[in-house]
Amino acid sequence: MKYILCVDQGTTSTKAFLLDGEGNLSQGTHVPFKQHYSQPGWVSHDAEEIYVSVLKAVAMVLKEHPEAKGNIACMGITNQRETTVAFSPSGKPFTQAIVWQCRRTSDICRRPEIREQSRRITEITGLKIDPYFSATKMLWLFENVRSLRERCASGEGYLSTIDGFLVFRLTGGKSYASDYSNCSRTMLFDIAKKTYDAEFLDLFGVPVNVLAKPMESCADYGAVEINEEYLRNNGFDGAETEALLSLNGVHITGVLGDQPAALLGQNAINKGDSKTTYGTGSFTLMNLGTEPVFSKNGLLTSCAWSIGGVTNYALEGSIFQAGSVISWLKDELGFINSPSECDDFCNSIEDCGGVYLVPAFTGLGAPYWKPDARGVLTGLTRGTGRAQIIRAGVESIAYQVTELVNLMTDDTGIKAGQMKVDGGVCASSFLMQLQSDLLGVTITRALSDEMTAMGAGLAAGIEAGIFKSLEQTGRFYKAGASYEPKMSAFEVSEKMDGYRSAVRAALLSGND
Image (cartoon, rainbow, N blue to C red; front, side, top):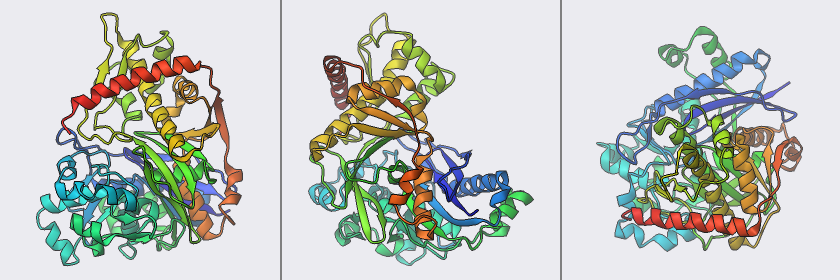
């Protein structure tokens, strides 16, 4: 049996899986890496550590599945999207990567020459001016990393999202490419023409030669070429080294940003299909088919995937804080010892007692796009305790998603009767039931939460000929738990009104 090696390079960890020709995804391996918070609102990663985490995760999954040795047909990669890394022709990063959550470029976003291009940026790239996207991160790197601009001008430097960096490193520098779904998150990419826009390149001072080549999601990104000496120098043991070197010559045939990969993995392949992934952040995507729809409500439009010359687009609402809210309750407040405790606390009380959390820890994303907004906790009384705050934190995730889905319906006129969900936070039955109640639709959780890896594997398998078509892969989707709405329309309206009042307080807290 032939296997597809699936790499899911996320915000806090890297995972690796094996997908077989019958659509069965193995148990994955998990390698966390360090988050760097050098200043308030700044988030960075060590890109070299990310590359090592990829190799570690892959070595682990190959060691755990000896039957796969010599039977890897191809490789698929999915990745955190807007995170930006500057690196040399040897692949060595010049400085830490700027993570998608990072707010350090807020001042750049306010520059008049950039604000003046606001409408055109949305019309061409489908995005809003925000520190979230890669272009302002690239400009910041040019302005703050010594000699970077000169190196890039002379062909001695590159700027890329994580997929381009990994393709470059995994192919030994032979290939430097990024798929349309990742390119369309740079704020430099014309999503209709599928090319970088010359005016935006000039606006942000980015030479086109430093960027990864845009390619379809299903394409040959080159052959793996892992250096044995590098493995020895970075602490890989003999078995790990042997496993990794066995991949040399295997081709990378699928690359997708994590959210469109999840859309594909969820079999949301038809116009109007939607999914929400509840991870570190939360991302709701609706498949728009082959014609982009540009939101009048502050949502984003991006390339979802491109297969055989046909590009599907997605309307997206991005929430910066979802699973990270649970981490905040655990790590910063010490209110819980593990995420699994949240449901017990939520179910121990009838309601939050009027308490709302707006988790604008790194600003607010869609539909507000206020990078300087700050988190607020409203409605506190003398009777407010730990349970109320925990429940308010969990509920805040559902309120944010509900707001985005309602705006998608307004933009497209499509109201689906079902939303597919995945991601670790879906383990909260309380959250999933509340989400169903607020949206008034069936929530269907995938049997596996690893839909990003699944999507990358399916894309790679289509290009490699393991799967005949995108439509054929639909039979691999397996549903898990489902939740039906129970709440009255009046109660939904009351809860959402309370949340919107709290959001207004958060918007007043910033200085943007």
